[in-house]
Amino acid sequence: MQEFDVIVIGGGMVGLAFAVDLSQKKNCSIAIVEPNTIDPSISKMFHTRVSAITLSSEAYLKSLNIWDNIKRKQVFIATKVWDQNSHGRLNFHAKDENMDHLGYIIENDLIQSALFGGIDKNKIEHINAKFSGLKKTESGYEVNLDNEASLSCRLLVGADGANSPVRTLSAIPVNERDYQQKAIIANIIGEKSFQKTTWQRFLSDSIIALLPLSENQASIVWSCKNYLADELTKLDHNKFNQSLSEAVEYRFGNLELETDRHVFPLIERSAKDYTKPNLALIGDAAHNIHPLAGQGVNLGFADARELNLQLLTNSGKALGDHSVLRKYARARRLDNELMAKTMTGLDWIYKENNEPLRWLRGLGMNVIDETPILKSFFQKQALGKSE
Image (cartoon, rainbow, N blue to C red; front, side):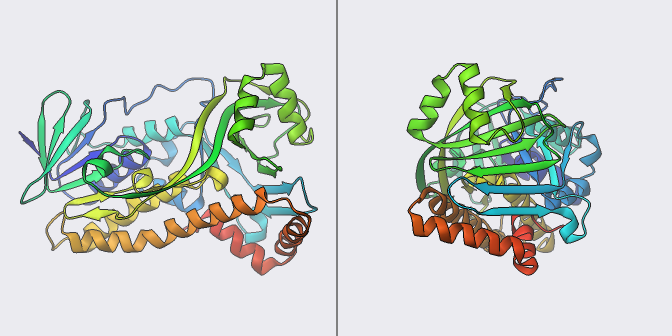
Protein backbone atom coordinates (compact mmCIF):
# COMPACT_ATOMS: atom_id res chain seq x y z
CA MET A 1 0.00 0.00 0.00
CA GLN A 2 1.34 3.41 -1.01
CA GLU A 3 1.40 5.94 1.83
CA PHE A 4 0.90 9.68 1.43
CA ASP A 5 0.47 12.58 3.79
CA VAL A 6 -2.39 14.00 1.71
CA ILE A 7 -4.60 12.48 -0.99
CA VAL A 8 -6.66 14.80 -3.17
CA ILE A 9 -9.55 13.15 -4.98
CA GLY A 10 -10.18 15.21 -8.10
CA GLY A 11 -7.70 16.87 -10.45
CA GLY A 12 -9.76 19.81 -11.67
CA MET A 13 -8.89 23.45 -11.13
CA VAL A 14 -9.64 23.54 -7.40
CA GLY A 15 -8.01 20.21 -6.54
CA LEU A 16 -4.88 21.13 -8.48
CA ALA A 17 -4.70 24.60 -6.93
CA PHE A 18 -4.93 23.13 -3.43
CA ALA A 19 -2.22 20.54 -4.16
CA VAL A 20 0.16 23.05 -5.80
CA ASP A 21 -0.38 25.55 -2.97
CA LEU A 22 0.25 22.93 -0.26
CA SER A 23 3.35 21.55 -1.99
CA GLN A 24 4.88 25.04 -2.18
CA LYS A 25 4.38 25.74 1.51
CA LYS A 26 4.72 22.39 3.27
CA ASN A 27 7.13 19.51 2.90
CA CYS A 28 4.73 16.60 2.50
CA SER A 29 3.80 13.87 0.03
CA ILE A 30 0.65 14.43 -2.01
CA ALA A 31 -1.32 12.20 -4.39
CA ILE A 32 -3.90 13.47 -6.84
CA VAL A 33 -6.34 10.73 -7.83
CA GLU A 34 -8.03 11.57 -11.14
CA PRO A 35 -9.02 9.10 -13.90
CA ASN A 36 -9.04 11.79 -16.59
CA THR A 37 -6.11 13.80 -17.84
CA ILE A 38 -5.09 16.68 -15.59
CA ASP A 39 -3.05 18.22 -18.41
CA PRO A 40 -5.66 19.03 -21.07
CA SER A 41 -4.54 19.70 -24.62
CA ILE A 42 -5.16 23.29 -25.65
CA SER A 43 -7.06 23.92 -28.87
CA LYS A 44 -6.72 27.00 -31.04
CA MET A 45 -10.51 27.32 -30.70
CA PHE A 46 -11.96 28.69 -27.48
CA HIS A 47 -13.36 26.02 -25.16
CA THR A 48 -17.00 26.42 -24.06
CA ARG A 49 -16.35 25.99 -20.32
CA VAL A 50 -15.06 29.28 -18.97
CA SER A 51 -14.82 31.10 -15.64
CA ALA A 52 -15.03 34.75 -14.64
CA ILE A 53 -11.89 35.05 -12.54
CA THR A 54 -12.13 37.73 -9.85
CA LEU A 55 -9.35 39.92 -8.55
CA SER A 56 -8.91 37.77 -5.44
CA SER A 57 -8.62 34.60 -7.56
CA GLU A 58 -6.16 36.39 -9.84
CA ALA A 59 -4.05 37.26 -6.79
CA TYR A 60 -4.23 33.65 -5.59
CA LEU A 61 -3.14 32.20 -8.94
CA LYS A 62 -0.30 34.75 -9.08
CA SER A 63 0.81 33.60 -5.61
CA LEU A 64 1.10 30.07 -7.05
CA ASN A 65 3.38 31.43 -9.82
CA ILE A 66 1.18 30.05 -12.60
CA TRP A 67 -0.71 33.17 -13.75
CA ASP A 68 1.71 34.06 -16.53
CA ASN A 69 1.45 30.51 -17.90
CA ILE A 70 -2.27 30.88 -18.66
CA LYS A 71 -2.04 31.28 -22.40
CA ARG A 72 -5.31 33.11 -23.12
CA LYS A 73 -7.00 35.64 -20.86
CA GLN A 74 -9.68 38.15 -21.81
CA VAL A 75 -9.76 41.09 -19.43
CA PHE A 76 -13.09 42.74 -18.65
CA ILE A 77 -13.36 46.28 -17.36
CA ALA A 78 -17.13 46.59 -16.98
CA THR A 79 -20.27 44.64 -16.15
CA LYS A 80 -23.65 45.70 -17.49
CA VAL A 81 -27.04 44.33 -16.45
CA TRP A 82 -30.42 45.19 -17.92
CA ASP A 83 -33.94 43.91 -17.29
CA GLN A 84 -36.58 43.14 -19.90
CA ASN A 85 -39.51 43.79 -17.57
CA SER A 86 -38.52 47.05 -15.90
CA HIS A 87 -36.52 50.19 -16.54
CA GLY A 88 -33.72 48.88 -14.34
CA ARG A 89 -30.05 49.11 -15.30
CA LEU A 90 -26.79 48.37 -13.48
CA ASN A 91 -23.44 49.51 -14.84
CA PHE A 92 -20.24 48.59 -13.01
CA HIS A 93 -16.91 49.88 -14.28
CA ALA A 94 -13.35 49.35 -13.04
CA LYS A 95 -12.68 53.09 -13.02
CA ASP A 96 -15.41 53.51 -10.36
CA GLU A 97 -13.13 51.64 -7.94
CA ASN A 98 -9.90 53.17 -9.32
CA MET A 99 -8.94 49.79 -10.76
CA ASP A 100 -7.55 48.77 -14.14
CA HIS A 101 -9.96 45.87 -14.55
CA LEU A 102 -12.68 43.84 -12.82
CA GLY A 103 -11.45 40.38 -13.77
CA TYR A 104 -10.74 37.98 -16.62
CA ILE A 105 -12.75 35.48 -18.62
CA ILE A 106 -10.57 32.38 -18.93
CA GLU A 107 -11.20 28.90 -20.28
CA ASN A 108 -11.15 26.29 -17.53
CA ASP A 109 -8.79 24.04 -19.51
CA LEU A 110 -6.17 26.78 -19.69
CA ILE A 111 -6.25 27.34 -15.93
CA GLN A 112 -6.01 23.58 -15.37
CA SER A 113 -3.11 23.28 -17.80
CA ALA A 114 -1.18 26.10 -16.10
CA LEU A 115 -1.77 24.54 -12.67
CA PHE A 116 -0.53 21.20 -13.97
CA GLY A 117 2.63 22.96 -15.11
CA GLY A 118 3.13 24.17 -11.54
CA ILE A 119 3.26 20.65 -10.08
CA ASP A 120 6.41 19.70 -8.21
CA LYS A 121 6.75 16.04 -9.21
CA ASN A 122 9.03 15.41 -6.22
CA LYS A 123 6.08 16.13 -3.94
CA ILE A 124 2.96 15.44 -6.03
CA GLU A 125 2.08 12.20 -7.79
CA HIS A 126 -0.81 11.93 -10.23
CA ILE A 127 -2.50 8.54 -9.95
CA ASN A 128 -4.52 7.88 -13.08
CA ALA A 129 -7.33 5.80 -11.61
CA LYS A 130 -10.88 6.14 -10.35
CA PHE A 131 -11.61 6.48 -6.65
CA SER A 132 -13.89 3.60 -5.61
CA GLY A 133 -13.98 3.38 -1.82
CA LEU A 134 -12.59 4.49 1.50
CA LYS A 135 -12.14 3.19 5.02
CA LYS A 136 -11.45 5.23 8.15
CA THR A 137 -8.29 4.21 9.96
CA GLU A 138 -6.85 5.30 13.28
CA SER A 139 -4.50 7.82 11.66
CA GLY A 140 -6.45 8.80 8.55
CA TYR A 141 -8.01 6.99 5.60
CA GLU A 142 -7.41 4.03 3.38
CA VAL A 143 -8.44 4.80 -0.19
CA ASN A 144 -9.38 2.13 -2.71
CA LEU A 145 -9.06 2.60 -6.48
CA ASP A 146 -10.72 0.86 -9.42
CA ASN A 147 -7.37 -0.66 -10.46
CA GLU A 148 -7.42 -2.61 -7.16
CA ALA A 149 -4.65 -0.45 -5.67
CA SER A 150 -4.94 0.90 -2.13
CA LEU A 151 -3.46 4.12 -0.73
CA SER A 152 -3.31 5.58 2.75
CA CYS A 153 -3.21 9.16 3.99
CA ARG A 154 -3.50 11.34 7.04
CA LEU A 155 -5.68 13.90 5.24
CA LEU A 156 -8.18 13.13 2.49
CA VAL A 157 -9.41 16.11 0.45
CA GLY A 158 -12.54 15.74 -1.68
CA ALA A 159 -12.28 18.06 -4.70
CA ASP A 160 -14.34 15.74 -6.88
CA GLY A 161 -17.20 17.94 -8.00
CA ALA A 162 -20.88 18.50 -7.37
CA ASN A 163 -21.73 14.78 -7.26
CA SER A 164 -18.73 14.07 -5.00
CA PRO A 165 -18.15 10.35 -4.34
CA VAL A 166 -15.97 11.35 -1.36
CA ARG A 167 -18.94 13.21 0.14
CA THR A 168 -21.27 10.28 -0.55
CA LEU A 169 -18.97 7.52 0.72
CA SER A 170 -18.07 9.46 3.85
CA ALA A 171 -21.83 9.78 4.59
CA ILE A 172 -21.89 13.59 4.66
CA PRO A 173 -25.51 14.69 4.03
CA VAL A 174 -26.20 17.35 1.41
CA ASN A 175 -28.97 19.89 0.99
CA GLU A 176 -30.20 20.26 -2.60
CA ARG A 177 -32.36 22.80 -4.34
CA ASP A 178 -33.43 21.99 -7.89
CA TYR A 179 -34.05 25.26 -9.72
CA GLN A 180 -36.09 23.45 -12.40
CA GLN A 181 -33.79 25.16 -14.88
CA LYS A 182 -31.08 24.22 -17.34
CA ALA A 183 -28.09 26.22 -18.54
CA ILE A 184 -27.26 26.31 -22.23
CA ILE A 185 -23.60 27.12 -22.84
CA ALA A 186 -21.92 27.79 -26.17
CA ASN A 187 -19.47 30.16 -27.83
CA ILE A 188 -20.75 32.79 -30.22
CA ILE A 189 -19.45 35.47 -32.54
CA GLY A 190 -21.07 38.89 -32.84
CA GLU A 191 -21.13 41.57 -35.50
CA LYS A 192 -20.28 44.24 -32.91
CA SER A 193 -17.69 44.43 -30.15
CA PHE A 194 -18.38 43.06 -26.65
CA GLN A 195 -16.38 46.04 -25.36
CA LYS A 196 -14.38 44.13 -22.72
CA THR A 197 -17.63 43.91 -20.78
CA THR A 198 -19.63 41.08 -19.23
CA TRP A 199 -23.31 41.41 -20.01
CA GLN A 200 -26.43 40.02 -18.32
CA ARG A 201 -30.03 40.39 -19.38
CA PHE A 202 -32.93 39.29 -17.22
CA LEU A 203 -35.93 38.02 -19.19
CA SER A 204 -39.32 36.75 -18.01
CA ASP A 205 -38.32 33.10 -18.36
CA SER A 206 -34.51 33.15 -18.46
CA ILE A 207 -31.25 34.96 -17.78
CA ILE A 208 -28.57 35.43 -20.43
CA ALA A 209 -24.93 36.08 -19.58
CA LEU A 210 -22.40 36.98 -22.27
CA LEU A 211 -18.75 36.65 -21.27
CA PRO A 212 -16.21 38.14 -23.71
CA LEU A 213 -13.49 35.87 -25.10
CA SER A 214 -12.14 38.38 -27.62
CA GLU A 215 -13.30 41.57 -29.29
CA ASN A 216 -16.11 39.80 -31.18
CA GLN A 217 -16.34 36.37 -29.52
CA ALA A 218 -18.10 35.46 -26.29
CA SER A 219 -19.23 32.54 -24.19
CA ILE A 220 -22.94 32.47 -23.35
CA VAL A 221 -24.66 30.99 -20.32
CA TRP A 222 -28.42 31.02 -20.96
CA SER A 223 -30.20 29.86 -17.79
CA CYS A 224 -33.74 28.85 -18.71
CA LYS A 225 -36.76 27.15 -17.27
CA ASN A 226 -36.61 23.50 -18.31
CA TYR A 227 -39.28 23.71 -21.01
CA LEU A 228 -37.61 26.71 -22.67
CA ALA A 229 -34.16 25.11 -22.55
CA ASP A 230 -35.59 22.04 -24.29
CA GLU A 231 -37.22 24.21 -26.96
CA LEU A 232 -34.07 26.24 -27.57
CA THR A 233 -31.81 23.20 -27.88
CA LYS A 234 -34.14 21.70 -30.51
CA LEU A 235 -33.89 24.80 -32.73
CA ASP A 236 -31.54 24.63 -35.70
CA HIS A 237 -28.55 26.95 -35.63
CA ASN A 238 -30.16 29.75 -37.62
CA LYS A 239 -33.30 29.88 -35.48
CA PHE A 240 -31.27 29.69 -32.27
CA ASN A 241 -29.04 32.54 -33.51
CA GLN A 242 -32.15 34.63 -34.17
CA SER A 243 -33.67 33.85 -30.76
CA LEU A 244 -30.43 34.75 -28.99
CA SER A 245 -29.94 37.97 -30.95
CA GLU A 246 -33.54 39.03 -30.22
CA ALA A 247 -33.18 38.16 -26.52
CA VAL A 248 -30.35 40.68 -26.15
CA GLU A 249 -32.07 43.25 -28.39
CA TYR A 250 -29.50 42.94 -31.21
CA ARG A 251 -27.13 44.93 -29.03
CA PHE A 252 -24.22 43.11 -30.68
CA GLY A 253 -25.81 42.81 -34.11
CA ASN A 254 -26.55 39.31 -35.33
CA LEU A 255 -25.07 36.64 -33.07
CA GLU A 256 -23.96 33.31 -34.49
CA LEU A 257 -23.10 30.04 -32.82
CA GLU A 258 -19.45 29.13 -33.13
CA THR A 259 -19.70 25.81 -31.24
CA ASP A 260 -22.25 23.17 -30.36
CA ARG A 261 -24.64 23.90 -27.52
CA HIS A 262 -24.16 22.05 -24.22
CA VAL A 263 -26.89 21.77 -21.60
CA PHE A 264 -26.77 20.94 -17.90
CA PRO A 265 -29.35 21.10 -15.07
CA LEU A 266 -29.07 23.79 -12.42
CA ILE A 267 -29.05 22.39 -8.89
CA GLU A 268 -27.74 24.16 -5.80
CA ARG A 269 -26.01 21.84 -3.32
CA SER A 270 -24.51 22.45 0.09
CA ALA A 271 -22.83 19.78 2.20
CA LYS A 272 -24.11 19.86 5.79
CA ASP A 273 -20.51 19.36 6.93
CA TYR A 274 -17.37 20.38 5.06
CA THR A 275 -15.17 18.23 7.28
CA LYS A 276 -14.77 15.07 9.31
CA PRO A 277 -11.68 13.95 11.20
CA ASN A 278 -8.91 13.60 8.56
CA LEU A 279 -11.25 14.68 5.74
CA ALA A 280 -12.19 17.98 4.09
CA LEU A 281 -14.39 18.92 1.13
CA ILE A 282 -13.49 21.87 -1.12
CA GLY A 283 -15.04 23.49 -4.19
CA ASP A 284 -18.16 22.00 -5.74
CA ALA A 285 -17.87 18.94 -3.49
CA ALA A 286 -18.73 21.24 -0.58
CA HIS A 287 -21.08 23.64 -2.37
CA ASN A 288 -22.24 24.53 -5.84
CA ILE A 289 -24.46 27.43 -6.74
CA HIS A 290 -26.53 28.96 -9.54
CA PRO A 291 -24.15 30.26 -12.24
CA LEU A 292 -25.85 33.67 -12.19
CA ALA A 293 -22.71 35.55 -11.06
CA GLY A 294 -20.06 33.12 -12.31
CA GLN A 295 -18.70 32.72 -8.78
CA GLY A 296 -18.31 28.92 -8.58
CA VAL A 297 -14.58 28.46 -9.15
CA ASN A 298 -13.74 31.62 -7.21
CA LEU A 299 -15.43 30.16 -4.14
CA GLY A 300 -13.47 26.95 -4.74
CA PHE A 301 -10.13 28.78 -4.93
CA ALA A 302 -11.03 30.58 -1.69
CA ASP A 303 -11.67 27.17 -0.09
CA ALA A 304 -8.28 25.86 -1.26
CA ARG A 305 -6.49 28.96 0.02
CA GLU A 306 -8.24 28.88 3.41
CA LEU A 307 -7.67 25.16 3.99
CA ASN A 308 -3.96 25.59 3.28
CA LEU A 309 -3.84 28.65 5.53
CA GLN A 310 -5.32 26.66 8.43
CA LEU A 311 -3.00 23.70 7.85
CA LEU A 312 0.04 25.99 7.91
CA THR A 313 -1.12 28.18 10.79
CA ASN A 314 -1.74 25.07 12.90
CA SER A 315 1.27 23.08 11.70
CA GLY A 316 2.01 21.99 15.27
CA LYS A 317 -1.07 19.79 15.22
CA ALA A 318 -1.38 16.46 13.44
CA LEU A 319 -2.24 16.66 9.75
CA GLY A 320 -5.96 15.95 9.56
CA ASP A 321 -6.70 17.18 13.10
CA HIS A 322 -10.44 17.85 13.19
CA SER A 323 -10.18 21.06 15.23
CA VAL A 324 -7.99 22.54 12.46
CA LEU A 325 -10.31 21.37 9.71
CA ARG A 326 -13.30 22.84 11.56
CA LYS A 327 -11.58 26.24 11.54
CA TYR A 328 -11.43 25.99 7.75
CA ALA A 329 -15.13 25.07 7.60
CA ARG A 330 -16.17 27.95 9.85
CA ALA A 331 -14.10 30.42 7.84
CA ARG A 332 -15.64 29.40 4.52
CA ARG A 333 -19.24 28.37 5.22
CA LEU A 334 -20.64 31.85 5.83
CA ASP A 335 -19.29 33.28 2.55
CA ASN A 336 -20.39 30.24 0.56
CA GLU A 337 -23.88 30.12 2.09
CA LEU A 338 -24.32 33.87 1.67
CA MET A 339 -23.42 33.66 -2.01
CA ALA A 340 -25.77 30.69 -2.52
CA LYS A 341 -28.69 32.47 -0.82
CA THR A 342 -28.00 35.65 -2.77
CA MET A 343 -28.13 33.74 -6.05
CA THR A 344 -31.36 32.01 -5.01
CA GLY A 345 -32.88 35.36 -4.01
CA LEU A 346 -31.87 37.06 -7.26
CA ASP A 347 -33.22 34.16 -9.26
CA TRP A 348 -36.58 34.47 -7.47
CA ILE A 349 -36.73 38.26 -7.80
CA TYR A 350 -36.18 38.12 -11.56
CA LYS A 351 -38.60 35.24 -12.14
CA GLU A 352 -41.47 37.14 -10.49
CA ASN A 353 -43.08 39.45 -13.03
CA ASN A 354 -46.10 41.03 -11.37
CA GLU A 355 -46.29 44.78 -11.94
CA PRO A 356 -45.46 46.07 -8.40
CA LEU A 357 -42.39 43.82 -8.12
CA ARG A 358 -41.19 44.78 -11.60
CA TRP A 359 -41.44 48.46 -10.61
CA LEU A 360 -39.60 47.88 -7.33
CA ARG A 361 -36.95 45.80 -9.08
CA GLY A 362 -36.24 48.51 -11.61
CA LEU A 363 -36.21 51.18 -8.91
CA GLY A 364 -33.80 49.13 -6.79
CA MET A 365 -31.39 48.58 -9.67
CA ASN A 366 -31.38 52.26 -10.54
CA VAL A 367 -30.93 53.37 -6.90
CA ILE A 368 -27.88 51.09 -6.64
CA ASP A 369 -26.56 52.31 -9.97
CA GLU A 370 -26.87 55.97 -8.92
CA THR A 371 -25.57 55.60 -5.33
CA PRO A 372 -21.75 55.31 -5.33
CA ILE A 373 -21.45 53.73 -1.84
CA LEU A 374 -24.10 51.07 -2.57
CA LYS A 375 -22.71 50.47 -6.02
CA SER A 376 -19.19 50.04 -4.68
CA PHE A 377 -20.40 47.58 -2.03
CA PHE A 378 -22.20 45.37 -4.55
CA GLN A 379 -19.34 45.55 -7.02
CA LYS A 380 -16.83 44.40 -4.40
CA GLN A 381 -19.10 41.58 -3.24
CA ALA A 382 -19.67 40.36 -6.78
CA LEU A 383 -16.09 40.52 -7.94
CA GLY A 384 -14.07 39.58 -4.87
CA LYS A 385 -11.55 41.78 -3.11
CA SER A 386 -7.89 41.57 -4.06
CA GLU A 387 -5.61 40.89 -1.14
